[in-house]
Length: 387
Image 1 (tube, helix red, strand yellow):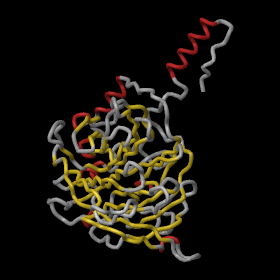
Image 2: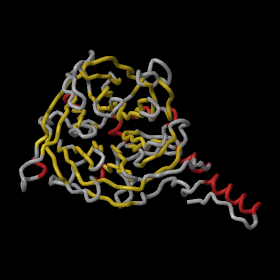
Image 3: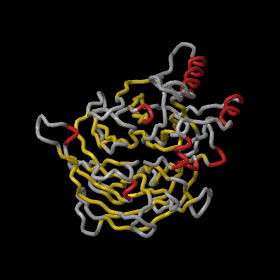
Image 4: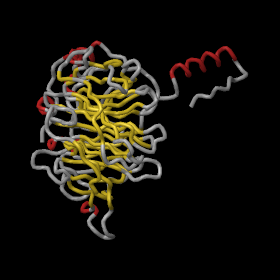
């Protein structure tokens, strides 16, 4: 950390050096790709507790991680060791598995897991229930406390829901709104509020209020989406932030669904700095920046939301430690960033980046980024990652 105390000797030189250091900041310049600098990594392919079979959903309850894989197993895992501490299987999964989830724990209240049950066209809300001592931790039950949705394009219906963004009440004790994204030709975000009279933290019924967006690739109003995949709430900015995956961009919106700005876009798809290729996962770091996991780019990128500036690229395609293969989701807590490395059936953990060093692109990087190079899982992304 740079000291703000100016030395008494050589004041002019000391002041100049101090100013340069302050301009540069205390943090190192951000990476522009390459293997992740890992804190730890856990998970492997399999069907036992702590193992994954192509995991696609991840969130945190503030102390532990929650993961759902393509076997429809819901697991709560220790964020340091990867040990499964509780779990259950979704009640139906023959048609396909969930591809989005959010976890909400109000102060002093019960944890609730909101699952976008994609191929059953509904949202399922669970409270975790631990099994008897000594029992299989993944045979614990998730107590279903609420569900809503059915197949269709009407109010309160879904084609393929992808995520649930949770706006808490001002005091944080309950849910004020849910923002549910969906794809399948009727790409939009539907907004729900608890039924009048609901108890904060114990909401069991939700009422459809309005929706915004339609299928397309336009950059103005009305808003258009092509697979809105992840939804996060920026309470400081009073905005909803969404990854518009197949349009290769991030959208910022007011709580009422009005477009604030796009970052990226269909005409900017690529591997270059500031470009994206199927951004699926999204996490807000609480400092005005966001990190996005690129399903088709096999990397993670950090952006300043106000300007759209790229502040770092993390990871590269591969199977080795620090490499990524079709990362679906990303989460952060306690100074760590957790990357769901889906194609490698693991979670990789890095230190949460800080600072505001913009990445600068060389001519060679720009040319490389604009080439239409194939990426692991890109075709699957175009098909919508079914299953």
